[in-house]
Amino acid sequence: MDAVRVALLREVLAGTQWPAATRRFAASLRSSVVPHGGGLLLVGTRAYEPWHLAAHLVDEAAWSGRPELAPLLVRHRVRPADPAHLAVGLGRLEGAGRGETLLLVAPERPDGGLLERVHGARRAGATVLSLGTGDPEVVGLAHDALTITPAVLEEEADEADERDEAVAGRHEAASGIDLDMVQHLVSAAAGENSLPTTRGRLRFRDRLSRLADQLTSPPPGRW
Image (tube, rainbow, N blue to C red; front, top):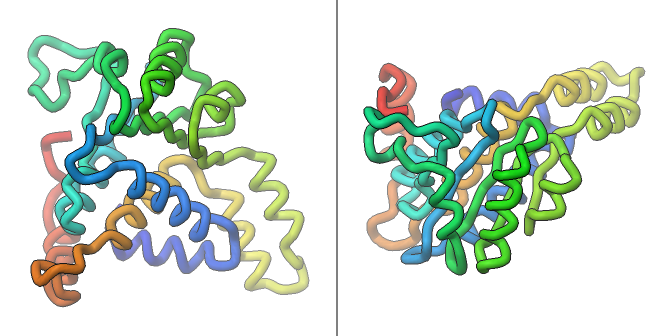
């Protein structure tokens, strides 16, 4: 999803919790991943690897001048032929500690081995963030969590005034949001609010030019 579609999604979701919630979570991500710190570790579940979130965070890190936002993707299965940046296994989590941030993306309950490693990383001082559907143990391990659950979506729908078509339309859109959409909103917010303030800051025209290049370029092959 490109920047234009993210903007359109935010417009559709205006009046719901999601624009503010994803920006708040992105702020937690930015504040936990400090320059010259241990970096950002990104891990999913055995059935779901957050490839697209990794790629979008890499882009946002480059555009915003915050290289520390570029994650290291930690994978459940690593093959001998995988390139170095895709050959980091779960053992990396056992070395995570103070100064590092671990972002867990979990659309379903992770297996016990992953939860044990995440718990160990937290005990060692790493900051743990989670994106998922609200598994109690995952949320309990996280310093900050953004949850996408049917209960939350139904609550928003119940609050919509059916007599107001615009309000009802926004809440209908909110009820259709999923984990992938939330990841796009979070990654976009992580980069947009962290542009450097020095003389090297990208001008609006420069950023717009880069966005135009992104829209017209084929998807990157590295992910």
